[in-house]
Image (cartoon, rainbow, N blue to C red; front, side):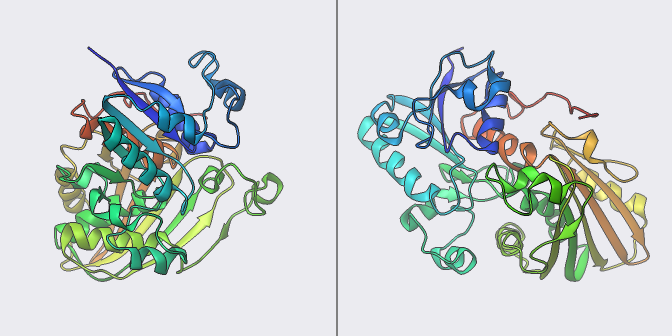
Length: 351
């Protein structure tokens, strides 16, 4: 069967590296070009040595060269460009695709298309939206929570947002909880990107654990907005993220009050039924562990109850299910490919 070309924008960061790793073995998608203005002309394998056997002499291109080589027919476009820069960049490719008769499908992994209107985006990110007229062309949700997107393009939720949504959407959709939602999560250092910061520098992070942006993290309004669109319910979310002493993964605990007391087995069955058709989400006995999902597109959920109190535990790989893997999952669906294409590799376990 014919392979479908894809391009990756913002191609030298961690999420782009994961996109390229997963796309390297995808049976139907083929990387045609990778954009990085800062590394234009360099070989992809020089920036990502782990990909040396897959991309040969492929080199990063600049924006102008990629815009000039849009093919006629179908093209998948992944953007891993930074928040605030991705929207304007995508707008250029959408415009050029129209002139080139390119049938373009975009999956943006930045935050630029996760909000319904430019005012909500500006309130969280403190700057005007880079392409407000395109917002109505994007859907922001996890593929597990939306059977079909009627819009051509996708704004993939963030990594913490992915874990939060996996826990909150079924509770709200099934009407199981009342009052506010309280969450605490721990993420690996790769969630902060390639550029080193004081909070990601290894000597500061090693054997350390600390909260950051408590009750003020930007993924909280993102999650409540998406939940309202999907379920029609506006739930207050109180979220405290933490930086963990590991590179990959997220472990999140969401607590809430149940409308009526339920046993752990009863609630576990309800969530298992909710995700029964979602091949990458498993509701398991006990509590999930990061090592069981790291490197994979799988999400493991666990449940604990005490009367009318519930705790939902979620473990994902922040770079895969929370970013690159979820983006490919959406691209597969938008291009009418099997949803698991290129994503069924098992977790690395002892990484």
